[in-house]
Amino acid sequence: MLKLTPQNYISKQIKFGNTEKVSENKSKKESYNDPLMQWPARGLAYSNELGAAISEVAPRLGTLLWFPAMLYFGADIYDKYKNEKTSYSPDAKRGTEQAIFQLLASVFLPTGAVIAGQKIASAIGVLGKNGLSLQSQEEIINFLQDFTNRRHIDKHQNNITEFKKHFVESISTKREKLIRENKIKNPFKVIKQAIFGRRHPESIAMSEKDRVLKFADTHIDEMFTLYDNLIRNQKPKAFSNKMWNTFEKLKNKYKKDADYKLTYLRDAAEDTIKKYQKSKIMNAKILKTVGGFVALGLAIKPIDNFVEHVVIKKYVAPNLNSMFSTNNTSVDKKSTSSEQNKA
Image (cartoon, rainbow, N blue to C red; front, side, top):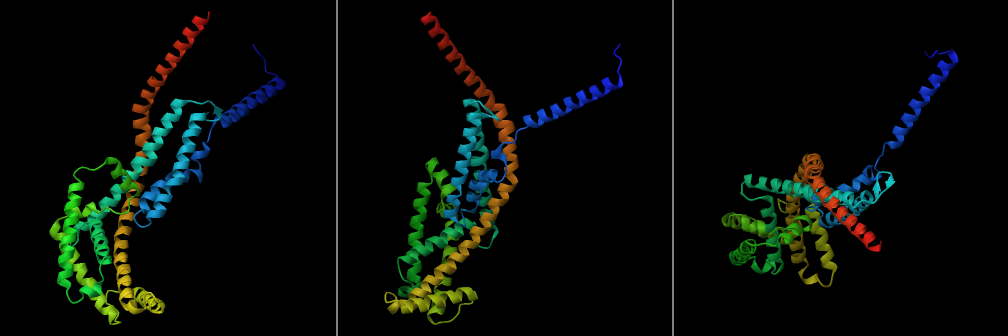
């Protein structure tokens, strides 16, 4: 029997105490915090989703925000390929798995959630008086602006009926063309337009023609009313003080410019009306952007869990294991046969 003397007991305590400290230190050493998963670096992974969400109100910034995310994804995939946590151990399987994870969890599914949220928010517009989605309303106003750019309002001021007649012919032709084009559409073009595109004119083709024409007719009447007020130097009821001040500034600016001097009032009025119409479009864009953010906030965690625990663990990892093990076996057989040939 081992007799514990006070000295032995103390030494045992010290020994056991040291063992505990060593094991604690070892566990601390073994715990690994991925630097790419820590903030603020981790925030770069969400910049593309932020870009997709704000693309409606700030399309250029939305596109630019994809670049930090792409750099982050590349760095993360390369890091997982090269390192097994703190150990340098290149592994193609690990890198491929991370690439698939990032592609699904950080690019396709979150962007899809944002687009779905925007479309749901847009569809709510159907519940309004005009029965059109926010996207359709936006595209009709865009088309009206493009149509008006090719002709001046003052030339049709006394013949609004003729202006409307040409507009109806033009938008009907455009709508029929869009219907034909959207029967067969390039899937890559769809993805590109969904992520980076600002306009979706096909929404006009998807809306009822009578509703499209009625909505356009209302806005044409409003446009001519606004123009009539402005050239008489009267503030329209629909204008805010800020919009009226914009007209005054443009009027004074064009009056001093030799290129606009003769038609300064007309040009100032037309440009102010366009700004007013764009402010209406912006309201629709903001609502769609909010819908995108809400959808992203609700979907981001379920997406991560689904991709990691279902797609990667159940489908991707097993297939990669079998694929890479087959490749390794082939390599081993080749090296064995080459060694035998040398012998």
